[in-house]
Length: 225
Image (cartoon, rainbow, N blue to C red; front, side, top):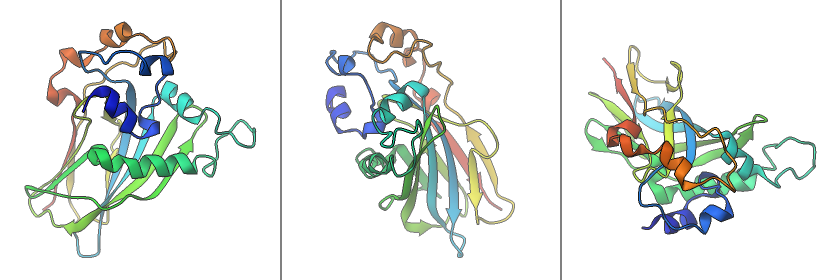
């Protein structure tokens, strides 16, 4: 799939780019156009199996502004959940085309996800956050290890697990589990975030050309006794 095709298919909130960029030729070198900071809760069922992941993805300020443009229906200067509900549904349901940028392995077995649920968007006055839950198609046991990875293989979107001990949290899991988090390299967002005039040259100044594949993969390893 070409980058232009990818842009056309990807969820709106993940590719909120200017019309000028959309008309530009596809770049030869992959580099991010959207920055997302993530938090994830790993939920276990009563049988001690991994049952669902609940994500909270916060977008960079410039893309957040593009996403909410024109959505303040009542003109109060704020963006309520009901005003953002349609965009939340479009994004949460469209993410399936990209595997939700989420990869989960339980005891060496790749896990599949069901349809997202409980999705909504919030806006804190600066940034937009997409909240959604991914239930596993079949709850999984992780007797040895559970590995969660978050990344975009094409590096169109720069994901990074948020700082802090609560960025990957367990809910209802076995006692004594340890969570080890490896975060993607922190790539600076350009200071000039005018998405209409933003040039490819500026992106290339912060490109991932200097980074390896592992530099933009976020990984959390959960080991339970």
